[in-house]
Image 1: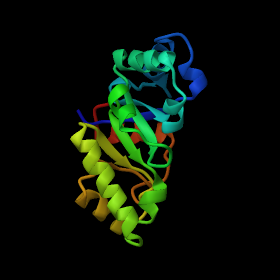
Image 2 (image 1 turned 45 degrees about the horizontal axis):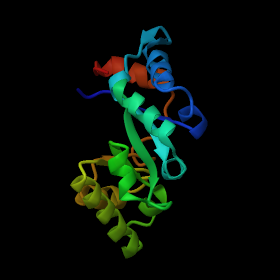
Image 3 (image 1 turned 90 degrees about the horizontal axis):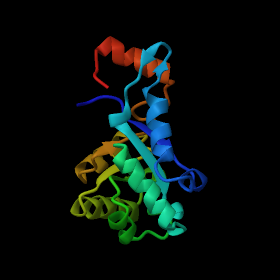
Image 4 (image 1 turned 120 degrees about the horizontal axis):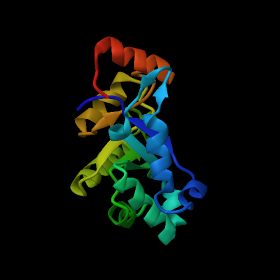
Length: 179
């Protein structure tokens, strides 16, 4: 159901650890009570990796990403479009989300090249069965254009500044949201 999704940036060093170790550590960490309340957010846990990490990956990276999947953790490819993007990464590593970099989002409504690029990334991702998150959304124009292109999720200051976990949990409790 709907609830809180938590994204965790993962470094190459963390991925190089023994297969499965990171996935278990993350799910154990996030199932512990926070401020006296159990979070139970494993189903909404996403590991964010960068294109750069995949460019320099080896078999241990692939095994680590598969271990995350086995733990029920989804994988997002962050800053998409800023590096040497390869469609092979998306298919070979079973990516769940592409995150359009804020650099492109910021220019929406001002620069036609960014509009074309954002629309193309969304279309391509959907054709591959991958959802798209646009980061750095700050204006109604940006939000409207992205939604018009079929973008799945938007994040940025237009919706909210970063909020401490305790405040999110209080909001969830007040609204009786399931996590």
